[in-house]
Amino acid sequence: MEQNELEEHMQSFDNLGFNNPRVYDWHKSILEALQNNGYRMSDFYFTGSNLNNYALLQHIAFKENSYNFLNSKGLINRRFCPITGESINNTFNFNIFGRLIYLSQKGLETCEDIKRKEWNKGNPKIDYDTAQRLKRQSKNIGNSGCFVVLLVFILSVASLFVFI
Image (cartoon, rainbow, N blue to C red; front, top):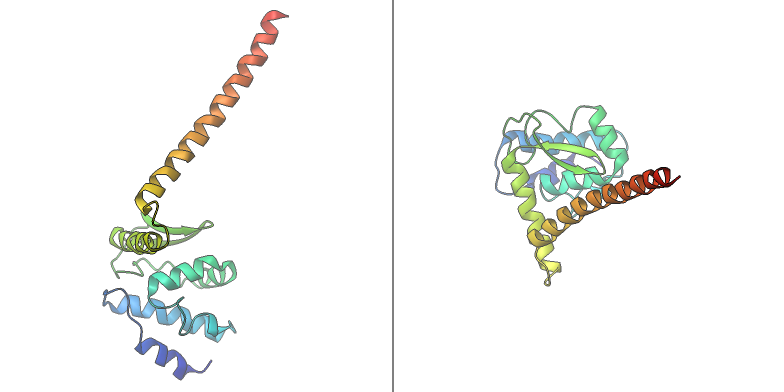
């Protein structure tokens, strides 16, 4: 891909209403690094995967090779939120398969709002917040369920020794 294609792409870059030079630079420096290292840029230019930094960070986090490459170059987590441009302390993150991209609280809330809207479009029977709550509850039940099974096993083994 030629540099003018990147410039053309960057002219149409709109980051969810957050107008900050850091978020623009984050986006552009990532695309430049990928382009300069032979990545197939058709995955990144003029697709749904690059409309804004949320779409780009999600796309990168799904692709282990590009995430690892960009992370090794120090281009992903740069002490500011790639959504809002705010300085951050790595308290909040976007996480896919353990690949972390640190955000501000407002940036994380913005990402959650996007996921909520996308979810609610395709799942009319259950809303996003209810699905997330049920998911958390099932994890808690799953963890306590393992504990209960382990406890029953231990008590069963202990009772065998008592009767012997």
